[in-house]
Structure formats: C-alpha cells, structure tokens
Length: 198
Image (tube, rainbow, N blue to C red):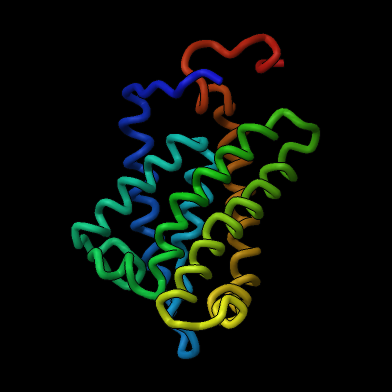
C-alpha cells in the first residue's frame, strides 16, 4: 500500500473535519445514570473516517484531541482540558481517533465491493461501535472501579439506539459525498487506475 502523501487539499480537509467535530459538540445531553453524555461527536469521527480515509480521518482526530488536551472548550458541553481525557469519558474521547481510523480503513478496503452503501454502513458500524465504545468501556471500568459488564451496561448499551442512527447518517452522508466526489479523488493523489475508475 502506498504511503499517504499530504497536499494543499489535505490542509483544508483535515481542519474542516476537526471543525465539524467541534460543531457537533453542540449536541450534548448529560444523563443522570452515567458519566458519559450523549454527544454528536461520535458522528463526526465516523464521517471523518468514511470521507477522508483512515490516515487523514485519524489526523483530523489528532488535531481535535490536541485542542482538547490544551484546554480548548471543543468537547460536547464546552468542555476541554487534559483532565477530561483521564476522566470517566476519556476512553470514548480517545476512541474518536481509533474509530475514525477503523472506519476509514474498512471503507477503503471494502469500497469496491458490490453494494457499496451497505459496506459503508457496515464499516461505520464496526469502526464506530468497536473503535469508540471498546476503549471507552475499558477506561470507564478502570476509572470508576466498575466491572467491565457494569461499564458496558452504563457506558455502551444505553447509547446503542442513538449510535445506530448516527451510523446510518454517516453512511448516507458519505455515500452522497462519494456520488458527487468519487472516492479515488478523496483517497488517492494523482489519477486513479483504470480498475478504480471503472
């Protein structure tokens, strides 16, 4: 696989998806039974991976996490600071990076298969749920001294219905972007090969 090269377009697209992440932070619903809030930012991570690919999507999350770490109020609810990253919801926030990378990796690997939309949907489901929830559950268990099962029940299960809607939304939006702007032009530098453009 050819190493990713970055150009002027990337200097626009990567910060753009960081900005989308910040904007989606305005969707913030705290819940009384868990330290993990409902937020739109998991959708942003899935969109970044789907549309930018694994490396560029992950890079947009690195920029976002750097802003969080230095105290910028970019998280849902206007939160920020390194303390948030080591708090109960820190695993989910760091999971944005893993989620974007996995979604992008799977989307790039499966994009040429028949039924492209469904593969994008599956990629978002696997990357979005496993990539974000898994580190979130483990870290929530460590910080709150809960069992992994208890952390799963308070930090994952209640969010699954909403996350299913986010997965669908990410797939629909990504498919719309790809219809207008083919994936080869998003993921590759230079002209696509004949097999890619067929």
